[in-house]
Length: 138
Picture 1 (cartoon, rainbow, N blue to C red):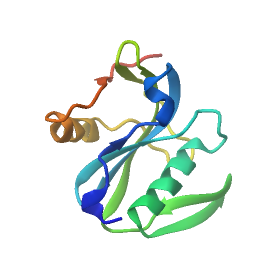
Picture 2: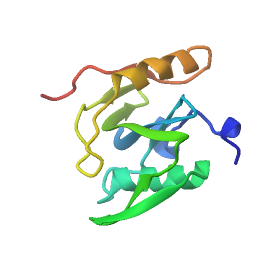
Picture 3: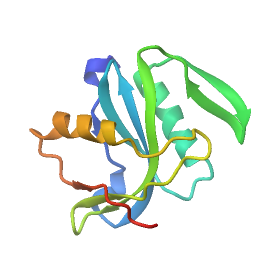
Picture 4: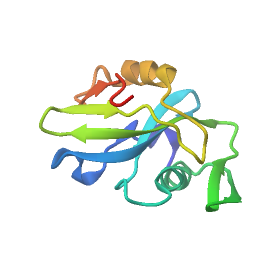
């Protein structure tokens, strides 16, 4: 897949059916923001799996480090992992609420800059959810 063909946001398939929590990673590739989610929050390495899947999807260079198993890290000058969080997607209220927590593996939290850049990219689309970036807990 060429970078220009990458969707900006890919929601989990069940996200518009029932309220659920998901791991979310904020990426930049060639200065464009991307948002990717886990398929569920119960996976032990949910942030690492999101990163692994995005590396494969975008065909980015990476390296694996020992930690909690083989953990993928971007090693591609075109891309960066900007933020990591857990989000609640509620299809009934059409909102995504970010928990504002830190990924223990990647030592990243929700990125306000990425959020602002993402809003600029999707404001002319028919994206079905509204972002709620207030702290949900804490």
